[in-house]
Length: 244
Image 1 (cartoon, rainbow, N blue to C red):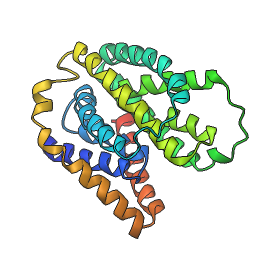
Image 2 (tube, helix red, strand yellow):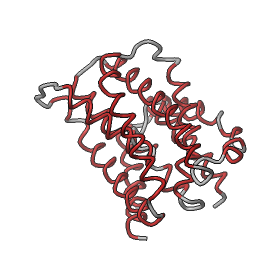
Image 3 (tube, rainbow, N blue to C red):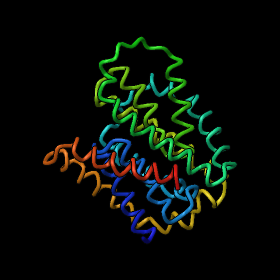
Image 4 (cartoon, one colour):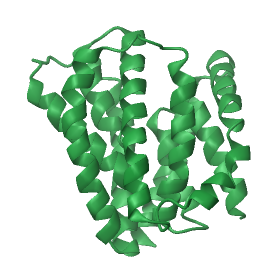
């Protein structure tokens, strides 16, 4: 399949995620799908501008609804995670990166299955929990654009109000994704090829379409049915990465 068709579909999936459907499963599908037609490092870089555009789009709805206390806890170690993730992205051979991304995507499935019960867990907040979540998110986001589960799991445990939760996640990952741009550029065209990025600008409008579709799906389809469909596809693609 042509990579342009796949990246169009990936943009749509990212829009669905921002529209409230699929959660991190939608984003986690991006790399295995693009990895069918290009190197995984290049797929990581090519997905970044789509995520940034989606973050900007989402911030319009949750402007200033974020909680800066949690941003300050998460961000410092996230920067460390970005640096460590960039090192591994540079030195890991393609086969090893494929296995690690396969493991990460399985981790997303486990998180998705466990996330509904996190709000009922008896939990005593500790600042270092935020540092660990931030560092893990920075690392996983840089290596595979899969930094969502550590931070969202941490914030779910805080039991903060829903709009503040989404606003905090949105601002945090917008900052993370912005910080990744110069890091990916330093890693070279194997990761972020500006000419290739410019060639997919036409795909950006599909993200708002995905957001709109996500909101419609919530209205007329059982979201759990849709989630389980995505989980099945993600399980197949993650196992393909691990055992191909």
